[in-house]
Length: 348
Ligand SMILES: [Mg+2]
Image: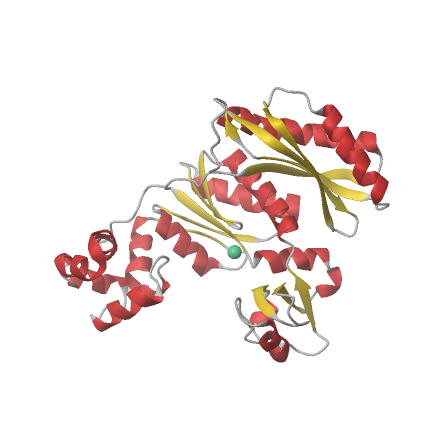
């Protein structure tokens, strides 16, 4: 079985947690271009905002016109922080499931014989450890899991068997099938294809003529209920990070370093498994106001996972504490600039 895990309105949900005063408000995460005060586009919006017609990709100006006055919060995107949370979720999923592929900052596919059970465990873990909601679909195919999740949003968990999966996909309009873009949809409409099951009525040769061998075959297979049962390749990871919450808010270097040491071991297990050495080390500091700060260093000669980096960590922590008076709530560690063990770079 496959599971598809999708965080609910990820960036906006994280910001809701960071800003308790945002409860019940429209929360809009913005990518400000900096040209004028309001120029730029909406990245994510919470469900409250969607009810006012605010959408991802919309100009911020338009979103401001739609948003209720005094009942909305417009915030700048903070990719660094969201990335740190994503890394934590990634770690939780990999602890649970055998084969995992991360498909974006807030979506994962996994294959596991015990997927229905694992889905439940994961949903609870993500809630307990990060206080975040996600939606998980479980099905006999990757596509089925993804579409089940889309139907179960938000905060949902939907498990379907092969016959329910076939029915769901057959009866879906083609436009709602992940991977079918507006252009393909338009072409299918002109062939009289509305629902996925209509694809089975079209001669496969014709589909291949119109859409090419790969897409044409894929569409034909969809129509006859042959769905992908492979996770597909994972894109090369460019960094690995682990973040953890301190037992209490502190700026005691001993406490901070012992937490970092714990996280370092977890991240290094991965480096060892993947046979990577690294050229950059960062320590991530999340202060009590939930702002993210990073201190980094890079090494001319790549380091092996077996090398001791206690002194480097001490140096980065001291540098941060010297310039920032805030207490820390969470800390993290990140390794990047990977090279395969043989010394060949994998990044370029
Ligand atoms: Mg999502």
